Image (tube, rainbow, N blue to C red):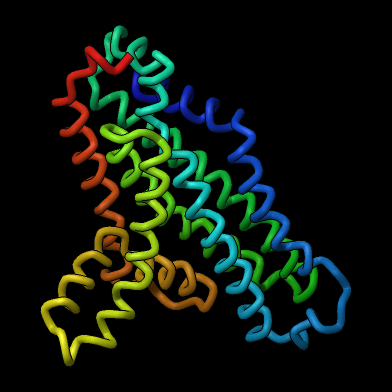
Length: 256
């Protein structure tokens, strides 16, 4: 119950921040063309065209969600310590791992709610134009993308235990760029520089964006997920353990 209390406080705090609402509204704005009666957007009323439209909405939402997740998670620990609210939590009968687990759950639930809102609106737009057959797959695809945001939240939570919010935001964006670009670059240089290619692939596994994005796309096309798509979700627990280990050993006497 104590963990859930921290999660609730984290969720409420994120809900009140205007910056997060800006990203959420930006994700909703992307669906406006789906409601407009324009001939160029009718996609011929076909299922393949509808799936292409759904994937377009999904790709844009994934781009916005990166910045929303980083913004939400970058100050989960560091800003609390700067304001003194973190030390107040530590004065309660709470272990440090409970605080971090509560923050992970709160921020992750916030991202899940954002994804569900985007998915329902995008699914409604597609259903309005092409019928109800693509509504459920579209919502499922958006819901599946929440796993990527949970992973990014866990990663930034670990950084937030030792770095200020601005530094976490910068490193979070850089890590995401590397996770997207590294596998592609590795494929281009594998023949000439095998060691560097192997290193890039390893870096790409820190935040395996490609696998998780493919998992969400498969929900639209109706293809079954494979083990390689689900395995990266285990990294959520890994990054939470890293954050807990670092935070447990940190001396907070001078952090106020």
